[in-house]
Length: 377
Image 1 (cartoon, helix red, strand yellow):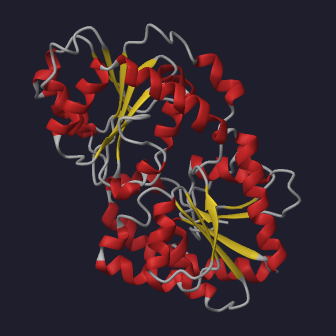
Image 2 (spheres, one colour):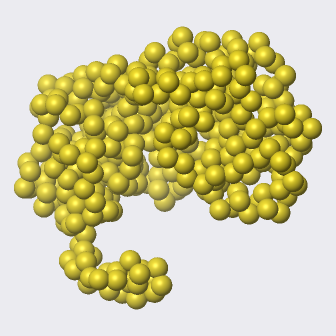
Image 3 (tube, one colour):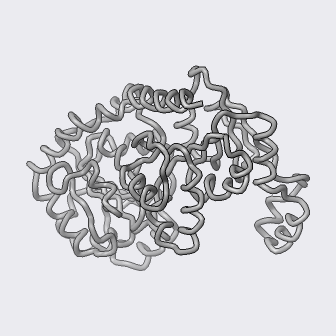
């Protein structure tokens, strides 16, 4: 398995525990950290630097130019390391996660092993955003032509892959990190009738558009005064925006940086309305989390991915223009004023979407997909 150090990857890989498969993980960027969650996996870390000298992290932060110079001599090449590990392990299949992290960089090596099966998982903005970048699209097309199997977190990305040359077998749509353990999460679902939290994902940057949501809130100050507004995972730009806007005077606004998973789930279990907004994404994991915690979802819909599970004005609301604060404001107001819509949506999601996200059910599908690869060997 080729992946960066990422919780989604660990949650996905954990599904293979006791499956009978022999699993190896090459940490692409080499965090030099062993992960207990996947302790059944042989974890190939600590490979990147020939000499992990004392003070390396300090020098990297204070003198990046010097660090780059040192790394010319001190850093091992990922492709050489991958080839070395393939020759050592002799795997039946290589599984790359994310096209421009584990896919395109692995292509020159995979070409040397034409009989070796190659699987690929698309997550998030992996396909949708990079297909719009000419220089990235060229590499994507070359890799897709050699990939035998594909997993994705939305049907949209399979369609994109097929459009750009993928002729292998699609193994299905799966949540990025596998399913959810309701036994540990359901106890956090509280106050179904008295919820007053509006929870907002705080990502801001290349894809995240939290600030456009905050601008929308400014238009609704009076309508929001009885609600508790919470922004989580807030980027530094979000904190700065609030400090220089009228939101600073909102007595009911709380902004947090990174929250641990349990604290976030506790919040979601008391949330009335969840808002996630980005210009590029796959099927957002936080959207799925909001659904299983029985919050009403308002979510952006880049490339139609979210519309695969949210039907507008039926079981949630879709933001079609993530940078249009007026649209977001109108959608939020509609959700606040339409109790029947919220009630119907949460009920439908709990009865139809949530049961399909049970971890054991997803795990069974994942193992069946891997078994289908094994039958092709």
